[in-house]
Image (tube, rainbow, N blue to C red; front, side):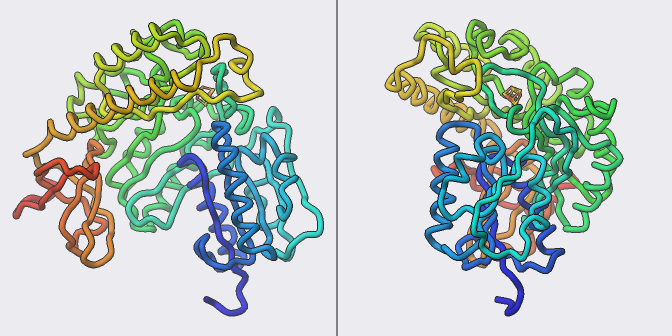
Length: 441
Ligand code: SF4
């Protein structure tokens, strides 16, 4: 511990966008002379970056806030993030919270802290989300393998179940020139891979008159970054031009995370999504035709109001037919400030549980099948650092998690790895064949 310096600890809940924003707030604290410590350590200030995507997320935030207050009752506790924007009063009622900062003020936190000491009264800084037009840039640091770069914020879509536009505001972005500067700054951290993050990144460019395609073309030219992943993109915004560019690029990887949410057109319409399943299947087929080895991660919500057993089975069969590589499955969560909260046809928890379990089984099978189909191949893996003697882990270009025997020389490098066998721990055992470098792949 550094005597004399104030210590600050961060705890992040939710998505990669939150992680990139926490990292940026942490750099602001470092510039002000704070020492960053782990959330398990004693700190003078705790910053909790919250998520509010579901009811369960809200509950987890409250538990986390109470845990830190219980552990260090004399520390200053500041709460930021989506939950803080949506329900500041609810958070302020938790005894021991000092500051609650909404979307416009979270990057002002180090200045609003004052002397960093415990306050006698909780203070709320909240904004009217409709007036928020500023874009606050952010990227994550600290992981020497990859960085999450925020390229876009907010969303103009109005999916009937989603509370995120109310927490993050309208779709907006930084100009491409500025984002390229951020990517260049990331190269100084010796990071090889950037994951582009945002709320609705395919919508990039709305506030600057640019486009997502222009953005990825410019980022492709940044020297020092070897790999890019596109975190999640709405199916209707994946254009043939984007697919062609990614297919031709040696840096943008064959990995797409695409929200489907339901495989039933009736439910997609109730969700007010901007596509039907035919368009979804067509985009997957297009990507596969140009990049056959692509990993597809797909989000699905089960138990949406009105989803009958027939709708669910219709969706299930559609997913089986499309064969994504992995499913991120979420039970429907009612958010009081959304239209779906008033929809009829609530689904019984036991039916939701059964549907979740059926899709989890399907996802596991699809994931293993995807892994197995690449056994015997040599693929480029960005190797993450590990403690001496431990297994080293990393991901192939097409997002296969790979383990390797410990070899300190490999950390932070992209190397060719032969995929040997699917382990029961969710990864593929690999080996670096002699005389194979990633450049030859
Ligand atoms: S696209 Fe729909 S689900 Fe995604 S953030 Fe926007 S409103 Fe929410």
